[in-house]
Amino acid sequence: MAFPSSADRPALTVTSAKIVIAGGFGVGKSTMVASVSEIPPVNTEAWMTQAGESVDPLSDSSAKTTTTVAMDFGRVTLAPDLLLYLFGTPGQPRFWPMWDDLCRGASGAVVLVDTRQLESSFPAVNYFENDSDVPFIVAVNLFDGKLTHSLEKVRDALCLDERTPLVTVDARDRRSTAKTLVTALSHTMKSTPTRA
Image (tube, rainbow, N blue to C red; front, side, top):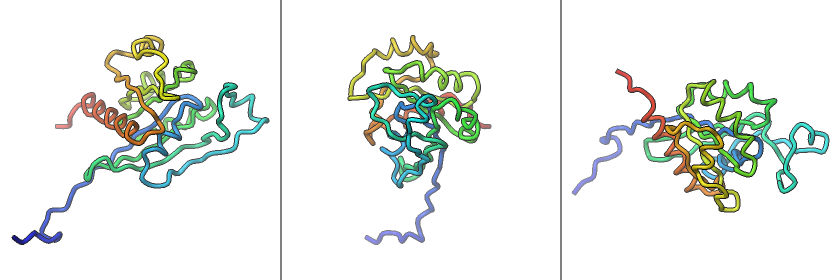
């Protein structure tokens, strides 16, 4: 039996989508992009210094030594015909004005949450609920592999609409991150009206 040559097969149409990874300062956005990107992630990391401590305060338990000052960028192929471009936002308040630009053209977003510093997630949730039309999900990052609060308690604390998907993710793990990205895309497809 003869197999058709590549010239005889129809060309595969590849769909690409832009996904924004947003959240507060130090919640794991850069880690999430890096864990799943099939290219070396582009990042704009700067060293954290003692002079910047009053601007970018960290908890005493944080081992963070760098911070994103513009964005992270990565790419992942989820299927032969589906390519995602990932844009990680900076988490510090002084960079929030960039979020509109980073979200322009996005198909969906993941708001990454650290329950150890839940208050840092309020502005990101507020942005996507009130200032953006980008469909979003919320993902609780499992630091140390543990869920320290039930998802119901997190939903209540964030005052999340029941229609907003709330999932867990280990931002260090490629599979876990990919599953979260699939959830974000599925939510976008369900919440976006189809074109005539």
